[in-house]
Length: 302
Image (cartoon, rainbow, N blue to C red; front, side, top):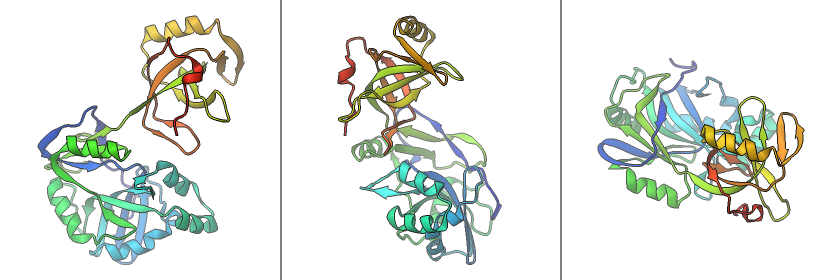
């Protein structure tokens, strides 16, 4: 288990927050799932897909001082905090770098923090222990620092925590049964994620013919009109897709690289999780056509 790739326990999506004394609730951090392995002075970090990313995060050198046990495997979220919230784009940027000088510079401009929420190993395998025991052990062995911190957690009160994350524009919350064991490489219904979705009205610029059908949607910016911001692949029913294709063929302009572009006259509402620094929407789904909306009203909101 130690210093080898581990496929962590994953969460199941749930639409609504809830209260339950049998659950612990935590903020959902927006970064990369990272498993930190320690033995003596040796520290290594792996992604959920098993990639060793230790060299990308020189901050990890200080982590060994914050883990007060000889041997450990911690389940964490690697994040970059900006203006009080984790910014996925920033950590994604860190993860892409491979040149040593650029990595060192980014550690100064986009410092990484590892938010620990579970411990799998401390010289003995802890995955068979209930969550509340693993949480107690995690609190014993971590000394919080700028680089490694335990996650905030509360028992029983998911609805109020969800409301707080919405106010702070965080990603959402996680709900975990207090008695849950840690099942490797499993998407468990005892661990739940409840996300803070947002909606925006967009103009339809075209649609993808190849691979999976998807709408190309855009928004109006102060200096750019009808800029593409997302490909929407999910949320349609067959009737909506047929109706759209029937109308769209009257608006065809040009086709290129598997995309049929149309005259931008139709609008639709989409649901998304987050907006990137490059003005793209992440994790997008279709919510409905807007026949009374005009494209000029579909604007990027700063």
